[in-house]
Image (cartoon, rainbow, N blue to C red; front, side, top):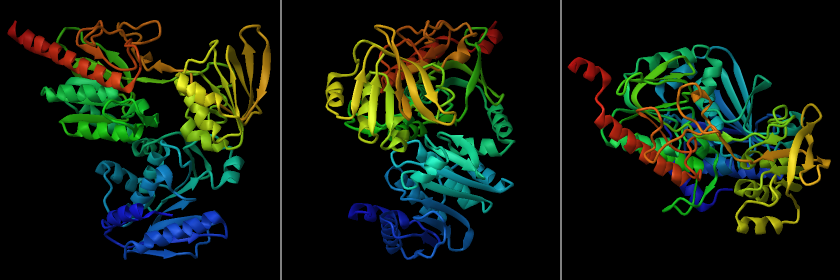
Length: 529
């Protein structure tokens, strides 16, 4: 299973084990079980503290438990092979079970250990899902820190019958004590906030105790990270309040147009940005959603940002970099069948539609790339573009047209997503040229029609927004409100690209620097008078 290079790398990691761990496998005669046995034997051969057994009796085969030799009540189970994006999760599970300390906030670990009640998690992932590892790793850590928590992590492609039976049409899909818990990406703090009733109050208390910032960046994507680095380097007390550090970047796979970097992926670039931010005295407040802005009454005064948990953060200068999100179709059936056939991430959810008929809505680069990707997995792809022609780059169009299981429809408007009450079974398409409607039978709809800025919470603040909801900025990244700057996909800047967002973030940071050195704090002005 593991080539020589991967074995050498894993052996090096296992050198961090502090105590013995056991791998207990439940196998049958299938090829996947043979591969699982091979993987477990390879892992056990790499370190004396790892032992392997093959007498497990779990109903899911192949599967295997990772547990501490000294404490069999703390365990995590992988059902299927945790390769692809989940190989890192496997390595971390081995290390944590073997006593290697996780790089996680100590307060969060104590919160896990203090949870009362029995929590039995089942979580379904796909090997191509870049959102799944965060959930896998969070549940793994919880199971290995609290004996009343168990986690069974299931590779959906191996257990397709169970996926069908449980109507799972999007990953990550998490169940708690047999009932649906959450569909989508979650980090440890988010899971704890759902289980621990006091989690929000605890976070609010910590935020309320923070001293005012000179610069507060709201949003943690490429623009926000760049802005914070620039202001911190100028010596200003800087904070980042991010609903999810990385933003859309975490949902992006192949990145090939970032100058100086021939290829990277969104989660990897996010890790690099986080490490860069960590090199400076920047207060990173992750999983913090802003819900209200109260602009300063005087130039040089403090702006107030109210968070969803009720706490407020204060700053003399703000940089708004809240990014954007996938645009919805806004047609009947879309919301009802979200995660039941309506999807927005082809990389995450594509494998769940293997051999099925799907539609991709949108003929720009994102839509055509999604259709190309999905055509190699699903049975048939219907690409639907509202315009009279595709808008994607010509090289992508040529690739798409060369694929035998793809139909391209232009000048088409999706008017309804159809379903049987539990999952999608078709859509209604209107020909914009003659008004005729027809129904297309299918099992999945992937929406790829652009972005909407995350600015709804700013509408009643006096901040100028465009008709599309974008924050209006000038050449310096300044808004119409003194001391408030903005950068990235939430603004009127054209070309929503990673490299553009980074540059705009730097520009906004320099704009905030210029504002701060030219304007004394309001309280200092009052004292001087």
